[in-house]
Amino acid sequence: MTKWYDNAIIYQVYPRSFQDSNNDGLGDLRGVIQRLDYIKALGVNTIWLNPVFTSPQVDNGYDVSNYYTIDPKFGDMATMTELIDKAHALGLHVLLDFVLNHTSDKHPWFQDALKSPNSLFRDYYIWEKTTNGLPPDNWGSFFGGSVWAEHPSEPGSYYFHLFDQHMPDLNWKNPEVREAMIEVAKFWVEKGVDGLRLDAFIHIAKGNLHQNYPTDSDEPVVAEPMFANLPNVVTYLQEFVQELRKINPNLYILGEGASADPNLAALYTRPVAGSALCDAIVSFRNLPKQARPQTKVEQQWHLRQQEKLDLAALPDSIVTWQTVLAQTTEPVLYFSNHDMPRMATVYADPEAQEQSLKTLATMLYLQKGAPIIYYGEELGLTNVELTRFAAFQDNTVAALKDQVPAAEQSAVLKDLSQTHKTAARQVMPWDDTPNQGFSKHEPWLRVKGKQTSVAEQEQDSDSVLNFYRSLLRLKQTALFMKGDFCLLNSPAKTIVFTRELNGKVGLVLTNLSAQSVAVSLPDLSLGKPELAVGHWQITDSELQLAPWSSAVFMTEHFDN
Ligand code: NOJ
Image 1 (tube, rainbow, N blue to C red):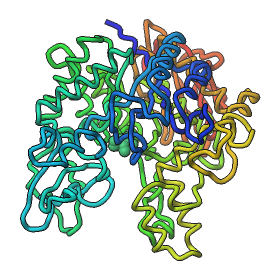
Image 2 (tube, rainbow, N blue to C red):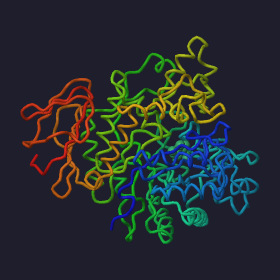
Image 3 (cartoon, rainbow, N blue to C red):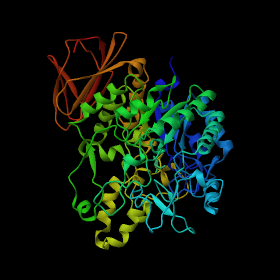
Image 4 (cartoon, protein in one colour):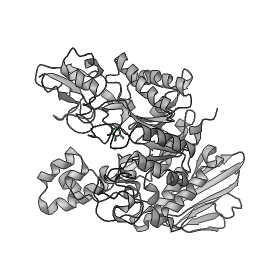
């Protein structure tokens, strides 16, 4: 049976950066309401909101202290209800970011758990004791340091945190925790949200907490096999999802499986007892990446290396994701999100910035699967330059301030701005007024210089924004939503594929390089392309594609 989300085209809204309605420098839900028409006109049908629950904002809302309330910074429950209603009236679905692996340390459960080992909520979290003055194991947190933090007044007693130490992990072994999280989720499903993005769900089961992870290092190590994708994830999730689907059988569950490969994504989307755990999986392994040669600054200060698309590995990756998921779901098609540098910074060709972005989008979003467009991507926004170490809001980066000599700080900041997630979370540039129409107040993230804006791009028929609108119009058609996918053999650094439905074929040809290329064509008369980027020309049985050019033709079945 067809579900609404079989045709999902998702727009990711990072609420603190989208539109500030009360001029405090921070985006909010009323701001999102004000921009619903813009979102609708882009051609998407679903909005994913990053977390808006009450939170001390240690990790921009991923540290929840009350799941039943909206953080006053973003609005209130009435505004949230209004947003859901108004989105629905426009035919837009709403997905909430649901943080279930951990809470904030300010959550009343954790506050109570801290009070005494006998607290009724102690076992809501993961505690271990040691007598040697060391944490129970050598596992490292994703945010640096050990996964263990010592109780402030109980020496030798440690709680577990996979992310920041202010984000203790919930103990999903405890049936009361499982029930409590189901109750929270039910509350939101009953409020009318259409789906949940399950944050970090692959970590809700942990391995033996006293098993050190084999390493030569004395430092804690991120030990994924000990806390990712363990079999109990499926057990816990099954119960959670089944309960929610009793309320809304069409609830869309988008699981964030950062390290999931195609087989794991298939496992999580396979029906168990008649119902899939997740409907789709967002993996950070969706596109093959390759480190660029290290810059001097990266080498000297051990900074993260910049990455690019691994074009040689791309065809294999596309075919593998499409094939492995074919029986359970469809791939999630995205370039970047709030945890990554922006697509235009990582993948675009600086010599052909806009054209390369349009061709990349054609290559990815016309494949079979659900696109997720990170707000501002449709303008071709790049990472912004942050000029203070503190602006990155990252302890590891903050520590650099005291290490890097003053003369070198600007080079380090420039490099960091290319790779860091915070530099990809800038406020949305709506127009050319001060603060670019985001707010009358200085935005929460100060950036150097102005960015291209929605207003500017609306005037330009050739803008990235107008291209995205045309591309998504094509994506919305049954052919590009439902059609079978087939990758064709094509020269290096090109991606060529068909989508086929009821004898109708969409032929997509993309040149992802700065060189012209000739792609051999099937023996068909192709006519004018439905959509094109750059320059193309048909000669004999070949399509000549200029650098970073692409073309989409409508045709009929052919043997490839
Ligand atoms: C994944 C989210 O996308 C990221 O921003 C967050 O820091 C972690 N989960 C922890 O919730």
